[in-house]
Image (cartoon, rainbow, N blue to C red; front, side):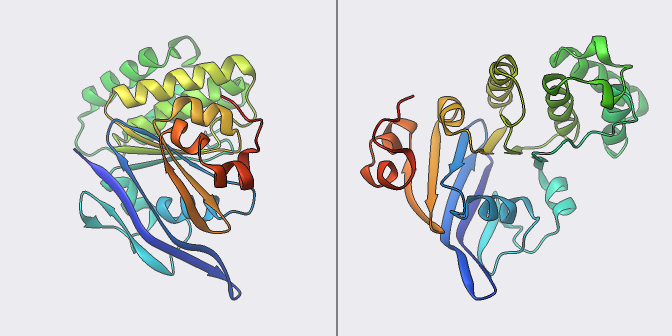
Length: 241
């Protein structure tokens, strides 16, 4: 079973340490949350795993292969998909063109196979009816579906979701949860960081809680909810799922 693992990550900015010895792991077919208060270091940790921010210390591995020093595009080739918070689709291209732009980078597929895979993704994410719509014309929920379908076009082992619940309406939140469960059932490991702690804990099987740059709790949602330190610094006494 594939595993994405970070060990002993650390990062400082201008002498201020924002991440101190943080580690986590994501197995294929699992959903993991990375959570914490604003300024806790969770986003920096997430970006180090994605490859957007270099780590000062620590290691990042896929299946025991060290990827710590690899740039983002090399990590993508090894199986790390990334979905940023802001819109990442090409606004002036159609949904079809957005997906094909990624599939055309797949040297393992013939032209016929690319076309077949594209149609499978359109069907899988129920976006066949908007295949000829431009990116700028999509609703928030449709855009998220296209972005996730496009991430899957690269055939990743893991998908890292940055604020997947941000800027979408309640109906779309339920839709995104269903899609995340679908990714898990596909055997893909999912790592989520999001300010919407309730929605994230509701969908993940394991959560890592970071505060002041350090890991303060890790475990099932029930375990972290029962942790008094997590209550004190992050969730508060009244929080319930």
